[in-house]
Image (tube, rainbow, N blue to C red; front, side, top):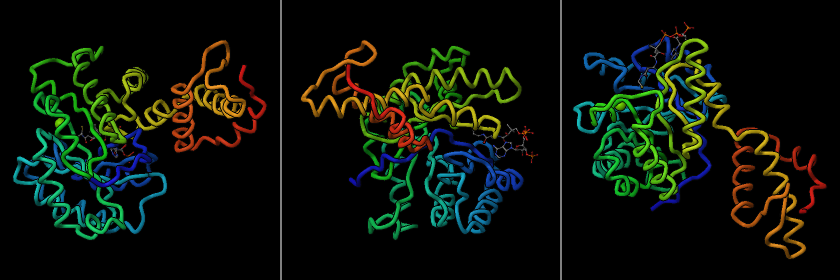
Length: 320
Ligand code: COA
Ligand code: MG
């Protein structure tokens, strides 16, 4: 299996219906880690062909990805539909497509199919190893998929993330979404655990369907905090108004970053003195804590925090 890049940051994944020329154009001026052009459920069956052609034109008109967007993806239709093959063969050959989001993945076979088609339609990107392959992000939205997570995670060398989709999952289980989200606890926890265990860079949480007004933003903030606490590192968005909150809440907290920088500086001094366990602010620090501090600092750097500046500020930090 190819090495999986761990550097992909997908805090916010914004769906943009490919049937809307206005939203396609609007998407290019937004700031978000990922834009996912949607051919699936935001496009009616009669519009699938038009949306696909419109998206192809949109992508072929793009010489460069806007600098405010790290990744451009396409959500194809489910592998079980007659549209998936056309979606993949029309769009996966577009140079600007960085990733394919595959909905309703139910088993490893679904991802094997997508992998084979990608190799066939874009061989240069999937065979020589010299160029970036088109990555796959799998939507987990059924009971069967949750039970089959380990084989799904092993199905493709291009798999680089899992997404939890609450609405289809609730439909599959005949359950109703509640504000507490406790009904999804098992599925969400299984997804973040599987992503971590197979070293997939992204575990992306459910859509917050409220997007208007202060109440909408408050619900979004609560969901972000809850998802982050469970181990998700990003969240699906449906509206540009959700992006800033999601980007901010899934970035490391600046207090945590300062703590991490202090730990790494003090640890260098402790290690030089031969001390593996030491104390900071009255708390014991040892290898796993130091590892966590390095991870927080690395992610903060990816999110644009000036770590060197913080290191200069805390250069005199000593282990206690
Ligand atoms: N991507 C890009 N632009 C978007 C957008 C999106 N997902 N959602 C809204 N916009 C644009 C609107 O076109 C509008 O542009 P304008 O200022 O140039 O007029 C602006 O953002 C404000 O939009 P607003 O009027 O508040 O929302 P709306 O009523 O136009 O759209 C939704 C509301 C929910 C229909 C729309 O956000 C949407 O279609 N979201 C994606 C849905 C989707 O993909 N679902 C499937 C995945 S779960
Ligand atoms: Mg769905």
